Structures are given as C-alpha cells and as structure tokens.
Amino acid sequence: MRLERLRTGLRAVISDDGRGGADERGGSGLLGIRRRVAALDGGTTLTGPAGGPTVIEVELPCVW
Image (cartoon, rainbow, N blue to C red; front, side, top):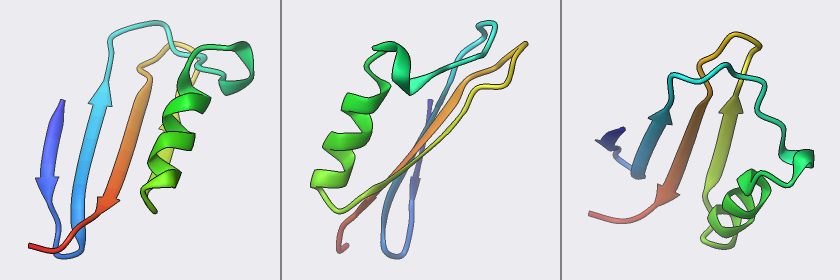
C-alpha cells in the first residue's frame, strides 16, 4: 500500500500479487468500496488485467 498527500487530498494505492481479473459485478466488495469513496466525494480507479496484479487507487478530497 502507498499513501500520497496531494495538494487537493489524499491518494491510497493498493495492489496485490494475485492473478488479476477483478470484476465489480461478481460480488467481490469492490463496488462497495467505490460507493463509500463516492459518498465522500472521492474517486476510485480499478485495474485488474488477467495475469495480475489488481490495483485499486482511491482519491479522497481534504484540505491540509
């Protein structure tokens, strides 16, 4: 996991060493994460190509 302080907020990048193929439609909990982040006016990016790795990036707004 990597955390970054941005001028406009906070970014968290989480990756794994799995086989990839993450799918939000499969009931994996990824859709729940996306909804929770959106409720805080944030954004989510998900990449999970076959063969891996899966990477989810979350940006949350905040003032420093």
